[in-house]
Amino acid sequence: MKQRKKQPIIYAFIDSQNLNLGTSKNIYKNRKLIYRGWKLDFRKFRRYLTDKFRIKKAFLFIGYVKQNQKLYKKLKSYGYELIYKPTVKDNFGKPKGNVDAELVLHAAAIEFPNYDKAVIVSGDGDFYCLLEYLKKKGKLGNLIIPNRKSASSLLRFFQKYKVFLIRDKEKLKR
Image (cartoon, one colour):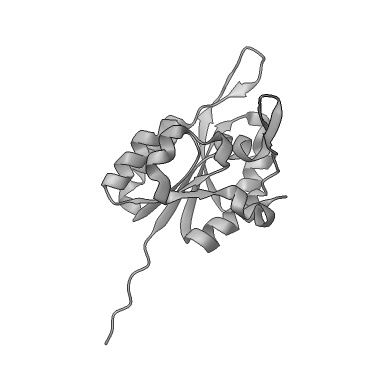
């Protein structure tokens, strides 16, 4: 009797700020528009993660703002597991919650024994050490980058793992 190969357990670790701004912000170079932002549909994106990458759990790292309860409830209903970061206000009174440390801690320690492959969703070079670590441990699945124009040059070392969301924009936009 032939044994069926066990499906790998794949988790996604999503930098929500990088994903949101990376898809929605227009990018200019020398006053010329080089990237037109678009609105990502988070429900479609969760389905995309499951269908295309076989993601079992999707951890969405997000700054916590009390007034956003409706948004958090909606994201949970789409299938995201939310990991909150307390926020502080910047000089303009805008909430800031950098989730990089939480994402690294969950991917490299807290959830590490629970998955076979990790998909990291961010174009931020701050995750270089995490990507290097996951690659060395044989656990780096893919690196999903919101857009080519704002991806850190540090990520060039992970070329074979990269997937750019712009390729699937039509499927993922609101």
